[in-house]
Image 1 (cartoon, rainbow, N blue to C red):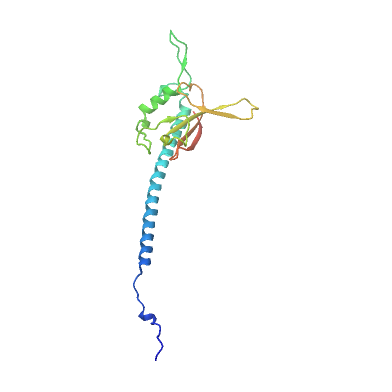
Image 2: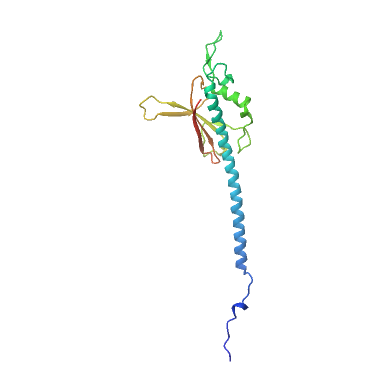
Length: 191
Protein backbone atom coordinates (compact mmCIF):
# COMPACT_ATOMS: atom_id res chain seq x y z
CA UNK A 1 0.00 0.00 0.00
CA UNK A 2 1.09 3.44 -0.75
CA UNK A 3 1.10 6.24 1.83
CA UNK A 4 -1.20 9.19 1.12
CA UNK A 5 0.74 12.13 -0.24
CA UNK A 6 0.21 15.84 0.10
CA UNK A 7 -1.28 17.49 -2.95
CA UNK A 8 1.34 19.41 -4.86
CA UNK A 9 1.45 23.22 -4.84
CA UNK A 10 0.13 23.17 -8.38
CA UNK A 11 -2.95 21.30 -7.26
CA UNK A 12 -4.10 23.83 -4.56
CA UNK A 13 -7.05 26.14 -5.14
CA UNK A 14 -6.00 29.55 -6.47
CA UNK A 15 -9.23 31.52 -5.71
CA UNK A 16 -9.81 34.13 -3.06
CA UNK A 17 -11.11 33.09 0.29
CA UNK A 18 -13.97 34.77 2.08
CA UNK A 19 -11.46 36.39 4.43
CA UNK A 20 -9.58 37.90 1.48
CA UNK A 21 -12.77 39.42 0.07
CA UNK A 22 -13.83 40.85 3.46
CA UNK A 23 -10.36 42.36 3.93
CA UNK A 24 -10.38 44.02 0.49
CA UNK A 25 -13.87 45.43 1.07
CA UNK A 26 -12.72 46.78 4.45
CA UNK A 27 -9.67 48.45 2.86
CA UNK A 28 -11.85 50.00 0.12
CA UNK A 29 -14.23 51.43 2.76
CA UNK A 30 -11.29 52.86 4.71
CA UNK A 31 -9.96 54.54 1.56
CA UNK A 32 -13.39 56.05 0.82
CA UNK A 33 -13.70 57.31 4.42
CA UNK A 34 -10.20 58.84 4.43
CA UNK A 35 -10.85 60.54 1.09
CA UNK A 36 -14.18 61.92 2.33
CA UNK A 37 -12.59 63.24 5.53
CA UNK A 38 -9.80 64.84 3.51
CA UNK A 39 -12.28 66.62 1.25
CA UNK A 40 -14.26 67.84 4.28
CA UNK A 41 -11.08 69.04 6.04
CA UNK A 42 -10.03 70.92 2.90
CA UNK A 43 -13.42 72.67 2.64
CA UNK A 44 -13.20 73.77 6.28
CA UNK A 45 -9.59 74.90 5.83
CA UNK A 46 -10.60 77.02 2.82
CA UNK A 47 -13.32 78.67 4.95
CA UNK A 48 -10.78 79.45 7.66
CA UNK A 49 -8.40 80.84 5.03
CA UNK A 50 -11.23 82.98 3.65
CA UNK A 51 -11.85 84.38 7.13
CA UNK A 52 -8.15 85.19 7.44
CA UNK A 53 -8.28 86.97 4.07
CA UNK A 54 -11.18 89.08 5.37
CA UNK A 55 -9.05 90.13 8.34
CA UNK A 56 -6.07 90.80 6.08
CA UNK A 57 -8.26 92.95 3.82
CA UNK A 58 -9.19 95.07 6.86
CA UNK A 59 -5.52 95.34 7.87
CA UNK A 60 -4.55 96.45 4.36
CA UNK A 61 -7.29 99.09 4.19
CA UNK A 62 -6.64 100.46 7.69
CA UNK A 63 -2.88 100.59 7.06
CA UNK A 64 -3.34 102.33 3.71
CA UNK A 65 -5.79 104.89 5.09
CA UNK A 66 -3.93 105.50 8.35
CA UNK A 67 -1.48 108.04 6.94
CA UNK A 68 -3.99 109.71 4.64
CA UNK A 69 -6.71 110.33 7.22
CA UNK A 70 -4.74 113.15 8.89
CA UNK A 71 -4.67 115.20 5.68
CA UNK A 72 -7.18 118.03 5.19
CA UNK A 73 -10.17 117.10 3.06
CA UNK A 74 -9.70 113.36 3.62
CA UNK A 75 -12.51 111.22 2.30
CA UNK A 76 -14.32 109.40 3.77
CA UNK A 77 -14.89 112.22 6.23
CA UNK A 78 -16.36 109.80 8.79
CA UNK A 79 -12.89 108.24 9.19
CA UNK A 80 -10.90 111.48 9.20
CA UNK A 81 -8.71 112.26 12.17
CA UNK A 82 -8.79 115.46 14.17
CA UNK A 83 -11.69 117.48 15.46
CA UNK A 84 -14.67 118.46 13.34
CA UNK A 85 -15.45 122.16 13.16
CA UNK A 86 -17.64 123.56 15.88
CA UNK A 87 -21.11 124.77 15.08
CA UNK A 88 -22.89 127.66 16.75
CA UNK A 89 -24.69 125.25 19.09
CA UNK A 90 -21.99 122.71 19.85
CA UNK A 91 -18.32 122.34 20.58
CA UNK A 92 -15.89 120.65 18.18
CA UNK A 93 -16.43 116.92 17.95
CA UNK A 94 -14.27 114.09 16.77
CA UNK A 95 -15.23 111.16 14.59
CA UNK A 96 -15.98 107.87 16.26
CA UNK A 97 -15.10 104.32 15.31
CA UNK A 98 -18.80 103.49 14.92
CA UNK A 99 -19.35 106.23 12.31
CA UNK A 100 -16.22 105.20 10.40
CA UNK A 101 -17.11 101.50 10.51
CA UNK A 102 -20.67 102.18 9.35
CA UNK A 103 -19.41 104.25 6.42
CA UNK A 104 -16.80 101.67 5.41
CA UNK A 105 -19.32 98.81 5.59
CA UNK A 106 -21.91 100.61 3.48
CA UNK A 107 -19.88 102.72 1.04
CA UNK A 108 -16.75 100.72 0.16
CA UNK A 109 -15.76 97.29 -1.14
CA UNK A 110 -16.39 95.92 2.36
CA UNK A 111 -20.14 96.00 1.74
CA UNK A 112 -19.70 92.86 -0.39
CA UNK A 113 -17.51 91.03 2.15
CA UNK A 114 -18.92 87.66 3.26
CA UNK A 115 -18.18 85.33 6.13
CA UNK A 116 -17.08 82.09 4.41
CA UNK A 117 -18.71 79.95 7.10
CA UNK A 118 -22.17 81.57 6.98
CA UNK A 119 -22.31 83.35 3.63
CA UNK A 120 -23.52 86.49 5.43
CA UNK A 121 -21.73 89.74 6.20
CA UNK A 122 -19.06 89.29 8.89
CA UNK A 123 -20.04 90.13 12.43
CA UNK A 124 -17.79 92.26 14.64
CA UNK A 125 -17.57 90.79 18.13
CA UNK A 126 -15.86 91.42 21.48
CA UNK A 127 -13.81 88.20 21.54
CA UNK A 128 -13.69 84.72 20.04
CA UNK A 129 -15.10 82.10 22.41
CA UNK A 130 -14.56 78.37 21.69
CA UNK A 131 -17.73 77.59 23.65
CA UNK A 132 -19.86 79.58 21.17
CA UNK A 133 -19.67 78.04 17.69
CA UNK A 134 -21.92 80.74 16.22
CA UNK A 135 -18.89 83.07 16.21
CA UNK A 136 -17.03 81.27 13.39
CA UNK A 137 -15.66 83.72 10.84
CA UNK A 138 -16.37 86.77 13.02
CA UNK A 139 -13.92 89.67 13.23
CA UNK A 140 -12.50 91.14 16.43
CA UNK A 141 -11.14 94.71 16.70
CA UNK A 142 -9.35 95.50 19.95
CA UNK A 143 -7.70 98.76 20.85
CA UNK A 144 -4.35 98.58 22.59
CA UNK A 145 -3.75 101.18 25.27
CA UNK A 146 -0.30 101.78 26.72
CA UNK A 147 0.03 101.71 30.50
CA UNK A 148 2.17 104.28 32.32
CA UNK A 149 5.92 103.67 32.16
CA UNK A 150 7.11 101.24 34.81
CA UNK A 151 3.90 99.22 34.87
CA UNK A 152 4.24 95.46 35.10
CA UNK A 153 2.09 95.11 31.99
CA UNK A 154 3.08 97.41 29.12
CA UNK A 155 -0.29 97.48 27.33
CA UNK A 156 -3.91 96.60 27.87
CA UNK A 157 -6.27 95.36 25.16
CA UNK A 158 -9.93 96.26 25.26
CA UNK A 159 -12.87 96.19 22.90
CA UNK A 160 -12.92 98.95 20.29
CA UNK A 161 -16.30 100.50 21.04
CA UNK A 162 -18.42 102.35 18.44
CA UNK A 163 -18.22 105.47 20.64
CA UNK A 164 -14.39 105.47 20.78
CA UNK A 165 -12.84 108.56 19.22
CA UNK A 166 -10.55 108.15 16.21
CA UNK A 167 -9.36 111.77 16.31
CA UNK A 168 -5.87 110.59 17.24
CA UNK A 169 -3.89 107.56 16.13
CA UNK A 170 -4.91 104.38 17.91
CA UNK A 171 -3.26 100.97 18.09
CA UNK A 172 -5.50 98.14 16.88
CA UNK A 173 -5.26 94.39 17.15
CA UNK A 174 -7.29 92.48 14.56
CA UNK A 175 -8.25 88.82 14.83
CA UNK A 176 -10.76 86.44 13.26
CA UNK A 177 -12.48 83.37 14.69
CA UNK A 178 -11.67 80.01 13.09
CA UNK A 179 -13.89 76.92 12.75
CA UNK A 180 -13.64 76.17 16.46
CA UNK A 181 -14.25 79.84 17.39
CA UNK A 182 -10.61 80.20 18.45
CA UNK A 183 -8.94 83.53 17.70
CA UNK A 184 -6.47 83.77 14.84
CA UNK A 185 -4.41 86.94 15.25
CA UNK A 186 -4.07 88.80 11.97
CA UNK A 187 -2.05 91.90 12.90
CA UNK A 188 -1.42 94.79 15.25
CA UNK A 189 -1.51 98.12 13.41
CA UNK A 190 -1.76 101.84 13.98
CA UNK A 191 -4.82 103.65 12.61
